[in-house]
Image (cartoon, rainbow, N blue to C red; front, side, top):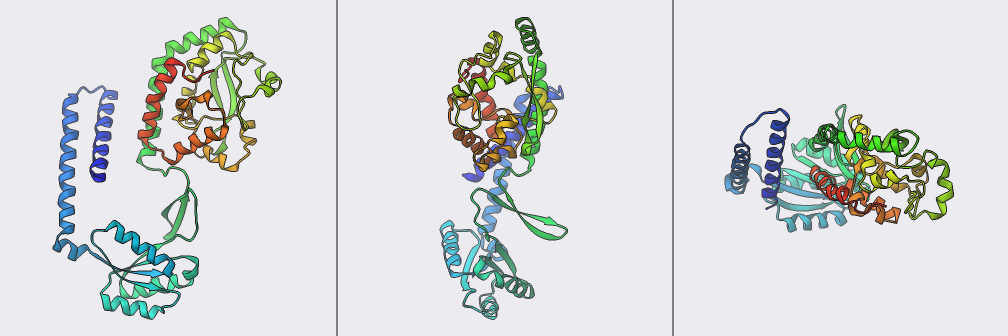
Length: 382
């Protein structure tokens, strides 16, 4: 069922992208034809997957593809590994024997390769057997046998491990942020297209807000402030001005009323907010100029909210800086989860890290859709 679900999602995304590209290119193919094409593609690919699976399970397929493996490493590592492989009932995999490298010479490993006609060795490379790793690989090279190295040398809490190549030398990459993929590149395209389309559609509202700000209070229409962007790089974030012009100078007078824990400053019924400011803040209209930041490549439509530089400097927990490992966004999980009703900065960061650790295009679209009622009804705004 997991394969079926993955195929369905892939075909659904392909269909949505084709419809979107057709719309942007001003082509008018029948949508029913595109959806039918997606359905037929799903069925054909599923049939192909089933044919391949049955071939692999057949005696002919197993004879060509079956892996006959030895498990090598410390006994404390190979036994749990074998249990996991047996529990998962890997198709086409047969575990022939376990080799404790703390007690068994390399020559005995070679003898086992000959006795069992093994075509692969799974090598667990913990510190206790690290000195044996090179010898095992060299012995298997001479035998023409593949080696799979479980490179779990270090215990990491959140990082995901990937393999890269640097001038012919293998490198382990420990990554705690989403890996660059077709989804991340698609996110950039969606950001640019989405910000451009929204800016065009919302331009009458933005002009109206600008006019109201000009008529309501003296000072600039836009509020500009240095915020922490990707990896903490400063950028100038734009907002419609919703406060009096000397708001920053008066901030220290209100510190005692701060309702947020941590470095962030939030006050209900902030006296610095203008009459028009209260309205545009309630419905998040003050955030619309950040579409320009998205078009500049400084922000994304979805991502952790950018914080002022002075608040970032006051992070009490260095782990909080991981929220700077992706582009900041106009909307995020925090905003669709109650925003100003979330009083604890740690909960805010938890939501941001939850977004980073589980990021996908689908999650972005879910947050965007959940943002619509938040903006229309002013949910969580103060």
